[in-house]
Length: 487
Image (cartoon, rainbow, N blue to C red; front, side):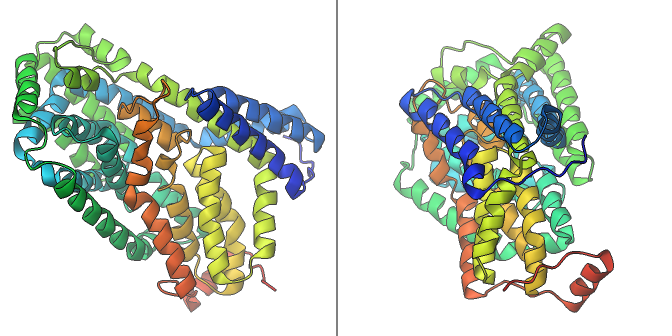
Protein backbone atom coordinates (compact mmCIF):
# COMPACT_ATOMS: atom_id res chain seq x y z
CA UNK A 1 0.00 0.00 0.00
CA UNK A 2 1.18 3.52 -0.74
CA UNK A 3 2.53 5.53 2.23
CA UNK A 4 0.97 8.71 0.84
CA UNK A 5 -0.98 10.80 3.36
CA UNK A 6 -4.45 11.23 1.93
CA UNK A 7 -6.61 14.29 2.49
CA UNK A 8 -9.22 14.16 5.22
CA UNK A 9 -12.63 15.29 3.94
CA UNK A 10 -14.53 18.19 5.44
CA UNK A 11 -17.51 17.34 7.62
CA UNK A 12 -19.94 18.12 4.80
CA UNK A 13 -18.06 15.97 2.32
CA UNK A 14 -17.69 13.13 4.85
CA UNK A 15 -21.43 13.06 5.38
CA UNK A 16 -22.21 12.70 1.66
CA UNK A 17 -21.70 8.90 1.33
CA UNK A 18 -23.27 8.31 4.76
CA UNK A 19 -26.42 10.34 4.09
CA UNK A 20 -26.84 9.07 0.52
CA UNK A 21 -26.45 5.44 1.55
CA UNK A 22 -28.91 5.79 4.43
CA UNK A 23 -31.32 7.47 2.03
CA UNK A 24 -31.06 4.62 -0.48
CA UNK A 25 -31.51 2.13 2.37
CA UNK A 26 -34.66 3.95 3.49
CA UNK A 27 -35.97 3.91 -0.10
CA UNK A 28 -35.42 0.16 -0.36
CA UNK A 29 -36.75 -0.78 3.08
CA UNK A 30 -39.66 1.58 3.60
CA UNK A 31 -40.76 2.83 0.16
CA UNK A 32 -40.22 -0.35 -1.86
CA UNK A 33 -41.05 -2.46 1.22
CA UNK A 34 -38.24 -4.86 0.35
CA UNK A 35 -35.99 -5.89 3.21
CA UNK A 36 -32.89 -6.61 1.13
CA UNK A 37 -30.24 -4.02 2.10
CA UNK A 38 -27.49 -5.59 -0.02
CA UNK A 39 -27.70 -3.39 -3.11
CA UNK A 40 -28.00 -0.08 -1.21
CA UNK A 41 -24.85 -1.02 0.73
CA UNK A 42 -23.04 -1.96 -2.49
CA UNK A 43 -24.01 1.44 -3.93
CA UNK A 44 -22.73 3.01 -0.72
CA UNK A 45 -19.34 1.37 -1.27
CA UNK A 46 -19.26 2.78 -4.80
CA UNK A 47 -20.17 6.29 -3.61
CA UNK A 48 -17.48 6.14 -0.91
CA UNK A 49 -14.97 4.84 -3.44
CA UNK A 50 -15.66 7.79 -5.76
CA UNK A 51 -15.17 10.16 -2.84
CA UNK A 52 -11.89 8.39 -2.05
CA UNK A 53 -10.68 8.92 -5.62
CA UNK A 54 -11.58 12.61 -5.31
CA UNK A 55 -9.53 12.81 -2.09
CA UNK A 56 -6.46 11.38 -3.80
CA UNK A 57 -6.77 7.67 -3.06
CA UNK A 58 -6.17 5.07 -5.71
CA UNK A 59 -8.35 1.98 -5.97
CA UNK A 60 -5.69 -0.22 -4.31
CA UNK A 61 -5.82 1.98 -1.20
CA UNK A 62 -9.61 1.91 -1.00
CA UNK A 63 -9.67 -1.84 -1.66
CA UNK A 64 -7.16 -2.49 1.12
CA UNK A 65 -9.22 -0.47 3.60
CA UNK A 66 -12.36 -2.30 2.52
CA UNK A 67 -10.85 -5.78 2.87
CA UNK A 68 -8.94 -4.94 6.05
CA UNK A 69 -12.17 -4.63 8.02
CA UNK A 70 -13.56 -7.77 6.38
CA UNK A 71 -10.45 -9.73 7.37
CA UNK A 72 -10.75 -8.59 10.98
CA UNK A 73 -14.32 -9.87 11.14
CA UNK A 74 -13.78 -13.22 9.41
CA UNK A 75 -13.74 -15.14 12.73
CA UNK A 76 -17.33 -14.01 13.29
CA UNK A 77 -18.29 -15.10 9.79
CA UNK A 78 -16.74 -18.47 10.65
CA UNK A 79 -18.96 -18.63 13.74
CA UNK A 80 -21.98 -18.01 11.49
CA UNK A 81 -21.02 -20.91 9.24
CA UNK A 82 -20.64 -23.30 12.20
CA UNK A 83 -23.87 -22.04 13.80
CA UNK A 84 -25.67 -22.77 10.51
CA UNK A 85 -24.37 -26.34 10.69
CA UNK A 86 -25.31 -26.73 14.33
CA UNK A 87 -28.89 -25.51 13.79
CA UNK A 88 -29.52 -28.02 11.00
CA UNK A 89 -27.85 -30.93 12.76
CA UNK A 90 -29.30 -30.24 16.23
CA UNK A 91 -32.81 -30.21 14.76
CA UNK A 92 -32.16 -33.49 12.95
CA UNK A 93 -30.61 -35.04 16.07
CA UNK A 94 -33.65 -34.16 18.18
CA UNK A 95 -31.72 -31.78 20.46
CA UNK A 96 -33.77 -28.69 19.57
CA UNK A 97 -37.07 -30.64 19.45
CA UNK A 98 -36.26 -32.10 22.90
CA UNK A 99 -35.65 -28.61 24.31
CA UNK A 100 -38.98 -27.43 22.87
CA UNK A 101 -40.82 -30.55 24.09
CA UNK A 102 -39.64 -30.34 27.69
CA UNK A 103 -39.92 -26.55 27.71
CA UNK A 104 -43.62 -26.77 26.84
CA UNK A 105 -44.15 -29.34 29.59
CA UNK A 106 -42.09 -27.66 32.33
CA UNK A 107 -42.16 -23.88 31.82
CA UNK A 108 -45.01 -21.75 33.16
CA UNK A 109 -46.27 -19.42 30.38
CA UNK A 110 -46.40 -16.49 32.82
CA UNK A 111 -42.66 -16.63 33.58
CA UNK A 112 -41.60 -17.85 30.13
CA UNK A 113 -40.16 -14.52 28.90
CA UNK A 114 -38.21 -13.85 32.10
CA UNK A 115 -36.93 -17.44 32.27
CA UNK A 116 -35.96 -17.33 28.60
CA UNK A 117 -33.88 -14.17 29.10
CA UNK A 118 -32.09 -15.65 32.12
CA UNK A 119 -31.39 -18.92 30.29
CA UNK A 120 -29.93 -17.11 27.27
CA UNK A 121 -27.77 -14.97 29.57
CA UNK A 122 -26.31 -18.03 31.30
CA UNK A 123 -25.63 -19.88 28.06
CA UNK A 124 -24.13 -16.79 26.40
CA UNK A 125 -21.77 -16.12 29.32
CA UNK A 126 -20.69 -19.76 29.12
CA UNK A 127 -20.21 -19.83 25.34
CA UNK A 128 -18.91 -16.29 24.90
CA UNK A 129 -21.00 -15.95 21.74
CA UNK A 130 -24.39 -14.31 21.46
CA UNK A 131 -24.81 -15.68 17.93
CA UNK A 132 -24.30 -19.26 19.05
CA UNK A 133 -26.82 -18.75 21.85
CA UNK A 134 -29.44 -17.17 19.56
CA UNK A 135 -29.08 -19.94 16.96
CA UNK A 136 -29.47 -22.81 19.45
CA UNK A 137 -31.23 -22.06 22.75
CA UNK A 138 -32.89 -18.98 21.23
CA UNK A 139 -34.35 -21.05 18.39
CA UNK A 140 -35.76 -23.58 20.89
CA UNK A 141 -37.30 -20.76 22.91
CA UNK A 142 -39.03 -19.44 19.78
CA UNK A 143 -40.67 -22.86 19.46
CA UNK A 144 -41.75 -22.89 23.10
CA UNK A 145 -43.10 -19.36 22.74
CA UNK A 146 -45.12 -20.41 19.69
CA UNK A 147 -46.60 -23.23 21.75
CA UNK A 148 -47.61 -20.78 24.47
CA UNK A 149 -49.08 -18.45 21.83
CA UNK A 150 -46.58 -15.70 22.75
CA UNK A 151 -46.00 -13.20 19.91
CA UNK A 152 -42.70 -13.95 18.17
CA UNK A 153 -41.40 -10.42 18.72
CA UNK A 154 -41.80 -10.71 22.51
CA UNK A 155 -39.88 -13.99 22.59
CA UNK A 156 -37.20 -12.61 20.25
CA UNK A 157 -36.83 -9.51 22.45
CA UNK A 158 -36.20 -11.65 25.54
CA UNK A 159 -33.77 -13.91 23.64
CA UNK A 160 -31.78 -10.96 22.30
CA UNK A 161 -31.70 -9.25 25.71
CA UNK A 162 -30.25 -12.33 27.35
CA UNK A 163 -27.93 -13.51 24.61
CA UNK A 164 -26.23 -10.19 23.87
CA UNK A 165 -26.00 -9.22 27.53
CA UNK A 166 -24.36 -12.53 28.33
CA UNK A 167 -21.94 -11.91 25.47
CA UNK A 168 -21.18 -8.45 26.82
CA UNK A 169 -19.89 -9.68 30.19
CA UNK A 170 -18.30 -12.97 29.12
CA UNK A 171 -14.48 -13.02 29.26
CA UNK A 172 -14.67 -15.50 26.35
CA UNK A 173 -16.41 -12.98 24.08
CA UNK A 174 -14.43 -11.35 21.27
CA UNK A 175 -16.11 -7.97 21.67
CA UNK A 176 -15.62 -8.03 25.45
CA UNK A 177 -11.91 -8.46 24.79
CA UNK A 178 -11.81 -5.96 21.91
CA UNK A 179 -13.14 -2.99 23.92
CA UNK A 180 -10.41 -3.08 26.60
CA UNK A 181 -7.79 -3.89 23.98
CA UNK A 182 -8.42 -0.68 21.99
CA UNK A 183 -8.68 1.45 25.16
CA UNK A 184 -5.64 0.00 26.97
CA UNK A 185 -7.49 -1.54 29.91
CA UNK A 186 -7.73 -4.99 31.51
CA UNK A 187 -10.59 -7.27 30.43
CA UNK A 188 -11.57 -8.23 33.99
CA UNK A 189 -11.48 -4.60 35.16
CA UNK A 190 -13.63 -3.81 32.11
CA UNK A 191 -16.20 -6.48 33.04
CA UNK A 192 -16.28 -5.25 36.66
CA UNK A 193 -16.80 -1.66 35.50
CA UNK A 194 -19.77 -2.71 33.35
CA UNK A 195 -21.68 -4.19 36.29
CA UNK A 196 -23.23 -0.86 37.43
CA UNK A 197 -25.05 -0.65 34.09
CA UNK A 198 -25.43 -4.39 33.46
CA UNK A 199 -27.23 -5.31 36.68
CA UNK A 200 -29.87 -2.51 36.67
CA UNK A 201 -30.60 -2.98 32.96
CA UNK A 202 -31.08 -6.72 33.44
CA UNK A 203 -33.33 -6.18 36.48
CA UNK A 204 -35.47 -3.64 34.59
CA UNK A 205 -35.78 -6.02 31.63
CA UNK A 206 -36.60 -8.90 33.96
CA UNK A 207 -39.33 -6.85 35.65
CA UNK A 208 -40.87 -5.91 32.28
CA UNK A 209 -40.86 -9.53 31.08
CA UNK A 210 -42.44 -10.72 34.35
CA UNK A 211 -45.19 -8.07 34.13
CA UNK A 212 -45.73 -8.89 30.44
CA UNK A 213 -45.90 -12.58 31.28
CA UNK A 214 -48.62 -12.09 33.87
CA UNK A 215 -50.63 -9.48 31.95
CA UNK A 216 -50.24 -10.33 28.25
CA UNK A 217 -50.06 -14.10 28.46
CA UNK A 218 -52.89 -16.17 29.91
CA UNK A 219 -51.84 -18.48 32.77
CA UNK A 220 -52.69 -21.39 30.50
CA UNK A 221 -51.07 -19.55 27.58
CA UNK A 222 -51.62 -21.43 24.38
CA UNK A 223 -54.60 -23.73 24.34
CA UNK A 224 -54.18 -27.25 25.67
CA UNK A 225 -55.05 -28.51 22.20
CA UNK A 226 -52.32 -26.41 20.56
CA UNK A 227 -49.62 -27.45 23.04
CA UNK A 228 -50.74 -31.06 22.85
CA UNK A 229 -50.65 -30.95 19.03
CA UNK A 230 -47.06 -29.63 19.10
CA UNK A 231 -45.75 -32.09 21.69
CA UNK A 232 -47.53 -34.99 19.98
CA UNK A 233 -46.06 -34.04 16.58
CA UNK A 234 -42.58 -33.79 18.10
CA UNK A 235 -42.98 -37.12 19.88
CA UNK A 236 -44.18 -38.83 16.71
CA UNK A 237 -41.46 -37.32 14.52
CA UNK A 238 -38.41 -37.52 16.81
CA UNK A 239 -37.14 -39.82 19.53
CA UNK A 240 -37.34 -37.47 22.53
CA UNK A 241 -35.00 -38.07 25.46
CA UNK A 242 -32.86 -36.11 27.94
CA UNK A 243 -29.87 -37.91 26.38
CA UNK A 244 -30.34 -35.69 23.33
CA UNK A 245 -29.33 -32.67 25.41
CA UNK A 246 -25.75 -34.00 25.54
CA UNK A 247 -24.54 -32.02 22.47
CA UNK A 248 -25.63 -28.74 24.15
CA UNK A 249 -24.03 -29.76 27.45
CA UNK A 250 -20.83 -30.70 25.61
CA UNK A 251 -20.58 -27.27 23.95
CA UNK A 252 -21.21 -25.45 27.23
CA UNK A 253 -18.68 -27.66 29.02
CA UNK A 254 -15.99 -26.97 26.41
CA UNK A 255 -16.68 -23.25 26.59
CA UNK A 256 -16.59 -23.16 30.41
CA UNK A 257 -13.20 -24.91 30.33
CA UNK A 258 -12.00 -22.03 28.11
CA UNK A 259 -11.77 -23.81 24.79
CA UNK A 260 -12.08 -21.55 21.72
CA UNK A 261 -15.69 -20.95 20.53
CA UNK A 262 -15.38 -22.27 16.97
CA UNK A 263 -13.88 -25.69 17.86
CA UNK A 264 -16.35 -25.96 20.77
CA UNK A 265 -19.32 -25.28 18.48
CA UNK A 266 -17.99 -27.67 15.84
CA UNK A 267 -17.70 -30.38 18.50
CA UNK A 268 -21.43 -29.77 19.03
CA UNK A 269 -22.01 -30.34 15.30
CA UNK A 270 -20.17 -33.69 15.47
CA UNK A 271 -22.00 -34.73 18.64
CA UNK A 272 -25.34 -33.75 17.10
CA UNK A 273 -24.56 -35.72 13.95
CA UNK A 274 -23.74 -38.78 16.05
CA UNK A 275 -27.04 -38.41 17.95
CA UNK A 276 -28.96 -38.14 14.66
CA UNK A 277 -27.42 -41.39 13.46
CA UNK A 278 -27.82 -43.31 16.73
CA UNK A 279 -31.21 -42.07 17.93
CA UNK A 280 -33.07 -40.75 14.88
CA UNK A 281 -31.89 -43.43 12.41
CA UNK A 282 -30.45 -40.85 10.04
CA UNK A 283 -27.69 -41.82 7.61
CA UNK A 284 -24.34 -40.07 7.32
CA UNK A 285 -25.32 -38.70 3.90
CA UNK A 286 -28.47 -37.12 5.41
CA UNK A 287 -26.47 -35.59 8.28
CA UNK A 288 -24.11 -33.97 5.76
CA UNK A 289 -27.14 -32.61 3.90
CA UNK A 290 -28.67 -31.19 7.09
CA UNK A 291 -25.37 -29.48 7.97
CA UNK A 292 -25.16 -27.93 4.51
CA UNK A 293 -28.75 -27.27 3.46
CA UNK A 294 -30.70 -27.43 6.71
CA UNK A 295 -33.42 -29.66 8.06
CA UNK A 296 -36.75 -30.13 6.30
CA UNK A 297 -39.86 -31.94 7.45
CA UNK A 298 -43.66 -31.85 7.14
CA UNK A 299 -45.39 -32.71 10.43
CA UNK A 300 -48.75 -31.17 9.62
CA UNK A 301 -48.41 -28.72 12.52
CA UNK A 302 -47.62 -25.29 11.04
CA UNK A 303 -45.84 -23.98 14.16
CA UNK A 304 -43.43 -26.92 14.11
CA UNK A 305 -42.87 -26.90 10.36
CA UNK A 306 -42.11 -23.16 10.21
CA UNK A 307 -39.68 -23.45 13.12
CA UNK A 308 -37.82 -26.68 12.28
CA UNK A 309 -37.43 -26.23 8.53
CA UNK A 310 -34.21 -24.24 8.76
CA UNK A 311 -30.49 -24.35 9.44
CA UNK A 312 -27.47 -25.36 7.39
CA UNK A 313 -24.52 -23.43 6.00
CA UNK A 314 -26.51 -22.26 2.98
CA UNK A 315 -29.16 -20.65 5.19
CA UNK A 316 -26.46 -18.30 6.47
CA UNK A 317 -25.32 -17.11 3.05
CA UNK A 318 -27.92 -14.31 2.85
CA UNK A 319 -26.71 -13.04 6.22
CA UNK A 320 -23.03 -13.53 5.42
CA UNK A 321 -23.32 -11.66 2.11
CA UNK A 322 -25.07 -8.79 3.91
CA UNK A 323 -22.36 -8.72 6.58
CA UNK A 324 -19.57 -8.67 3.98
CA UNK A 325 -21.17 -5.74 2.16
CA UNK A 326 -21.78 -3.86 5.42
CA UNK A 327 -18.18 -4.49 6.50
CA UNK A 328 -16.91 -3.34 3.12
CA UNK A 329 -18.90 -0.12 3.41
CA UNK A 330 -17.55 0.47 6.91
CA UNK A 331 -14.00 -0.23 5.79
CA UNK A 332 -14.31 2.18 2.87
CA UNK A 333 -15.64 4.91 5.19
CA UNK A 334 -12.76 4.34 7.58
CA UNK A 335 -10.09 4.34 4.85
CA UNK A 336 -11.39 7.56 3.27
CA UNK A 337 -11.38 9.10 6.80
CA UNK A 338 -15.07 9.99 6.60
CA UNK A 339 -15.80 8.51 10.02
CA UNK A 340 -12.70 10.20 11.44
CA UNK A 341 -13.89 13.58 10.14
CA UNK A 342 -17.28 13.16 11.83
CA UNK A 343 -15.75 12.05 15.15
CA UNK A 344 -13.18 14.87 15.09
CA UNK A 345 -16.00 17.40 14.70
CA UNK A 346 -17.80 15.92 17.70
CA UNK A 347 -14.63 16.02 19.82
CA UNK A 348 -13.97 19.60 18.74
CA UNK A 349 -17.36 20.75 20.07
CA UNK A 350 -17.72 18.64 23.23
CA UNK A 351 -15.59 19.64 26.22
CA UNK A 352 -17.07 18.03 29.36
CA UNK A 353 -16.59 14.44 30.52
CA UNK A 354 -20.35 13.85 30.38
CA UNK A 355 -20.45 15.13 26.81
CA UNK A 356 -17.49 13.03 25.74
CA UNK A 357 -18.88 9.87 27.36
CA UNK A 358 -22.27 10.44 25.73
CA UNK A 359 -20.61 11.15 22.38
CA UNK A 360 -18.45 8.00 22.57
CA UNK A 361 -21.48 5.81 23.31
CA UNK A 362 -23.60 7.39 20.59
CA UNK A 363 -20.69 7.28 18.12
CA UNK A 364 -20.40 3.52 18.64
CA UNK A 365 -24.17 3.17 18.14
CA UNK A 366 -24.14 5.40 15.03
CA UNK A 367 -21.22 3.45 13.56
CA UNK A 368 -23.35 0.33 13.99
CA UNK A 369 -26.10 2.03 11.96
CA UNK A 370 -23.82 3.39 9.22
CA UNK A 371 -21.11 0.75 8.92
CA UNK A 372 -23.13 -2.30 9.94
CA UNK A 373 -20.26 -3.79 11.93
CA UNK A 374 -20.03 -4.19 15.74
CA UNK A 375 -16.25 -4.57 15.58
CA UNK A 376 -15.69 -1.30 13.75
CA UNK A 377 -18.19 0.41 16.08
CA UNK A 378 -15.97 -0.57 19.02
CA UNK A 379 -12.52 -0.22 17.47
CA UNK A 380 -12.93 3.15 15.72
CA UNK A 381 -14.32 5.29 18.58
CA UNK A 382 -12.07 3.41 20.99
CA UNK A 383 -9.01 4.59 19.09
CA UNK A 384 -10.33 8.09 18.44
CA UNK A 385 -11.59 8.98 21.93
CA UNK A 386 -8.89 7.41 24.14
CA UNK A 387 -6.51 10.43 24.09
CA UNK A 388 -9.39 12.71 25.22
CA UNK A 389 -10.06 10.59 28.31
CA UNK A 390 -6.36 10.53 29.18
CA UNK A 391 -6.16 14.30 28.73
CA UNK A 392 -9.15 14.76 31.06
CA UNK A 393 -7.69 12.43 33.66
CA UNK A 394 -10.57 9.96 33.45
CA UNK A 395 -10.04 6.21 33.33
CA UNK A 396 -10.44 4.75 29.86
CA UNK A 397 -12.58 2.08 31.54
CA UNK A 398 -15.39 4.62 31.06
CA UNK A 399 -14.72 4.66 27.32
CA UNK A 400 -14.50 0.85 27.15
CA UNK A 401 -17.91 0.57 28.80
CA UNK A 402 -19.46 3.21 26.52
CA UNK A 403 -18.25 1.67 23.26
CA UNK A 404 -19.13 -1.86 24.42
CA UNK A 405 -22.69 -0.75 25.11
CA UNK A 406 -23.04 1.32 21.97
CA UNK A 407 -21.30 -1.38 19.93
CA UNK A 408 -22.12 -4.89 21.19
CA UNK A 409 -25.60 -4.16 22.57
CA UNK A 410 -26.93 -1.93 19.78
CA UNK A 411 -25.69 -4.28 17.04
CA UNK A 412 -28.68 -6.70 17.16
CA UNK A 413 -31.13 -3.78 17.08
CA UNK A 414 -30.03 -2.62 13.60
CA UNK A 415 -31.64 -4.90 10.97
CA UNK A 416 -28.86 -4.46 8.38
CA UNK A 417 -26.08 -4.74 10.96
CA UNK A 418 -24.24 -8.05 11.29
CA UNK A 419 -25.96 -8.71 14.63
CA UNK A 420 -29.45 -7.71 13.53
CA UNK A 421 -29.26 -9.62 10.26
CA UNK A 422 -28.27 -12.78 12.11
CA UNK A 423 -31.03 -12.44 14.71
CA UNK A 424 -33.69 -11.97 12.03
CA UNK A 425 -32.42 -14.94 10.02
CA UNK A 426 -31.69 -17.40 12.86
CA UNK A 427 -34.93 -16.77 14.73
CA UNK A 428 -37.04 -16.93 11.57
CA UNK A 429 -38.63 -13.53 12.10
CA UNK A 430 -39.74 -13.53 8.46
CA UNK A 431 -39.56 -9.85 7.52
CA UNK A 432 -37.94 -10.30 4.11
CA UNK A 433 -41.34 -10.32 2.44
CA UNK A 434 -42.21 -6.84 3.66
CA UNK A 435 -44.13 -7.67 6.86
CA UNK A 436 -42.14 -5.72 9.44
CA UNK A 437 -44.29 -6.63 12.47
CA UNK A 438 -41.60 -8.80 14.04
CA UNK A 439 -39.20 -5.84 14.05
CA UNK A 440 -41.00 -4.98 17.29
CA UNK A 441 -38.36 -7.21 18.88
CA UNK A 442 -36.09 -4.14 18.70
CA UNK A 443 -37.82 -2.04 21.42
CA UNK A 444 -38.59 -5.24 23.34
CA UNK A 445 -34.90 -6.18 23.61
CA UNK A 446 -35.03 -3.98 26.69
CA UNK A 447 -31.70 -4.83 28.29
CA UNK A 448 -29.79 -3.95 25.10
CA UNK A 449 -30.91 -0.33 24.85
CA UNK A 450 -31.44 0.27 28.56
CA UNK A 451 -27.77 -0.31 29.42
CA UNK A 452 -26.36 2.58 27.33
CA UNK A 453 -29.15 4.83 28.63
CA UNK A 454 -28.09 4.05 32.21
CA UNK A 455 -24.43 4.57 31.26
CA UNK A 456 -25.18 8.03 29.86
CA UNK A 457 -27.17 8.86 33.01
CA UNK A 458 -24.12 7.96 35.12
CA UNK A 459 -21.90 10.20 32.99
CA UNK A 460 -24.11 13.23 33.64
CA UNK A 461 -24.47 12.54 37.37
CA UNK A 462 -20.84 11.55 37.94
CA UNK A 463 -21.86 8.17 39.34
CA UNK A 464 -19.69 5.14 38.52
CA UNK A 465 -17.41 7.32 36.36
CA UNK A 466 -13.91 6.62 37.74
CA UNK A 467 -11.00 9.00 37.40
CA UNK A 468 -7.69 7.51 36.30
CA UNK A 469 -5.66 6.01 39.13
CA UNK A 470 -1.98 6.82 39.59
CA UNK A 471 -1.17 3.29 38.43
CA UNK A 472 -3.18 3.83 35.26
CA UNK A 473 -1.48 7.16 34.58
CA UNK A 474 1.92 5.55 35.12
CA UNK A 475 1.04 2.84 32.60
CA UNK A 476 0.04 5.51 30.07
CA UNK A 477 3.44 7.14 30.48
CA UNK A 478 5.22 3.80 30.26
CA UNK A 479 3.41 2.85 27.09
CA UNK A 480 3.82 6.31 25.56
CA UNK A 481 0.07 6.78 25.18
CA UNK A 482 -1.09 10.10 23.74
CA UNK A 483 -3.08 12.45 25.98
CA UNK A 484 -5.06 15.23 24.31
CA UNK A 485 -5.70 18.32 26.38
CA UNK A 486 -9.23 19.71 26.21
CA UNK A 487 -9.58 23.48 26.16
